[in-house]
Length: 344
Ligand code: NDP
Ligand code: GDR
Image (cartoon, rainbow, N blue to C red; front, side, top):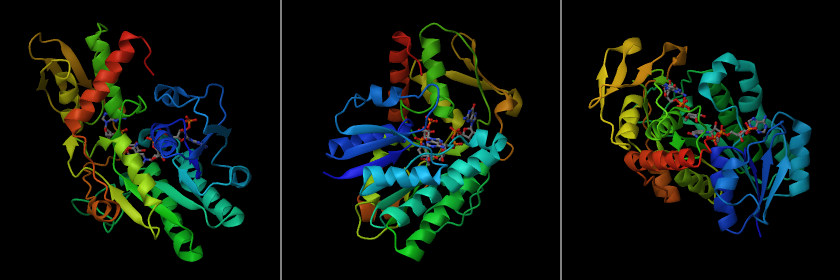
């Protein structure tokens, strides 16, 4: 039986990856950080919280000695580093915490691998945010980076350290440059889930106006469940490498809002521009969405669209779920939660 460590087990990707590896008969150590209320709701929703081969271990990515002990105690063949301060908006308010966790954190694991067992295969969760102010359309493994947030800068440092440890010490250190991927398990601070949760509340009678920031930002949104399969495949190759995972389609935040309201049979009519923009129910005239500039970021990533042909050729990986299907399954999950009054 193979053993894997997943950091960030309480997050969206950690939960899906744990489920995938358990299905592949791995022993999984899920590393979570101590806090007064640890969020295990995602692994509970997936029905794996009590799986006999899932072991939850306390761990903080910012601690080198904890990283060494984690690997000594669990003796994994594979380490998936998914832990991060992952919210771009917060990174502008907490640049140093973001640098410590998201930037330096992965280096603790890389060092721990060198010290404990250089044969361990390492996956680093890199991001399309590293492309930031994009230098080419679409973006692939050769596109120059230009991060636009403290989060993007921190991730870029961690990405290059992953590449550097691969080249300097021969570690099997892979970096997955993943474009946005969403699911019913997405944190409610991220825009897709913020939208689908609000839509579900409206459909179940709680009338509120959904306030959003920049509606013109364009993202390449895929389904998280498919992206964790790509992570796994990156650690099964002969040579460690860097891969982009993306759908190849880009849409605006406004498009996602429209799709989500359509899922509950509300057709939105848009009025006004920029900070004055609002969306009303075309049938009733009721205000559903308005822009609030407090959700704007000091610097924005305007357009992301990925080219995942390398992953298609070398990993046989491809995104399959359309944005319409993804949006529908997120709205449906939030509707179910509202009906059982258990929103997360
Ligand atoms: P989440 O925000 O859902 O999960 C992040 C996880 O990191 C949480 O489990 C969090 O724990 C944990 N964490 C944060 N700080 C620490 C720390 N100091 N020590 C240990 N654990 C910590 O992110 P996702 O699941 O969406 O993403 C997974 C990874 O992939 C992240 O690194 C993210 O930056 C990256 N990524 C995500 C993309 C996406 O679209 N989802 C795209 C590209 C990259 P806690 O519950 O305690 O907060
Ligand atoms: P992103 O995701 O920044 O791409 O990072 P997010 O969903 O936060 O924002 C996407 C776009 O929507 C715009 N936006 C809003 N965003 C939020 N969160 N809330 C709002 O109210 C709102 N209104 C408009 C944003 O300005 C942005 O343009 C995610 C994270 O998962 C990262 O960890 C990951 O690396 C990248 O995706 C790829």
